[in-house]
Length: 216
Image 1: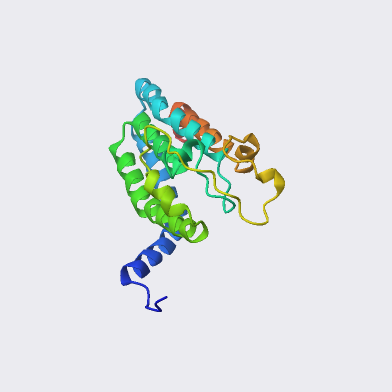
Image 2 (image 1 turned 60 degrees about the horizontal axis):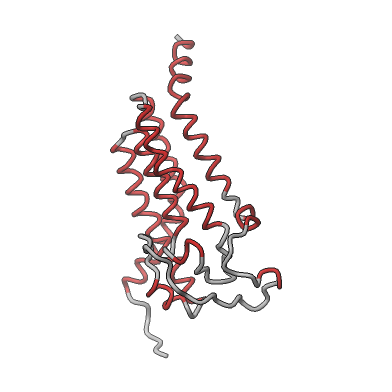
């Protein structure tokens, strides 16, 4: 095998991935601040909130469904939603974020979310794919059958991968949704977060207005 140094583009990508991981939380706070500012600037329309559910609910379902299949670092998950898209968790997050942008009818929030996805999640996905490619020999074949983000219309026919050595006997069953995995990954936090955001859409602005009048 050649001992050539890594390609400059590869080094740049790795550096940006490290930066992306560091700025992910601060950038999230910036987007949250824009969300509150837009919510303060104008009241959300009930119709927009109702339409947002058409994106948020499928996003929550997809994240929860995927969480019940994925066994991080133990096997290459290729069943359930992973037979349609390699990144159902990220796709679910995109749907949820888009839904709340619709709820606010805010191009500012939508643009901020798009920038956040490009700056943070694109390099993170690339980093995770390098990790999976190094750990699982069948990853390239899986990539040829299943798209990165936009799902297939039909599930890809891929064999179930063997687990890594050292996995317990209870982990040998693959291909079915596991509520225990859903709970282990604490994916219910997504539903809790979405509920709190909807409560903020309905009650935060009136509460802030009431507080402002009380301080006068």
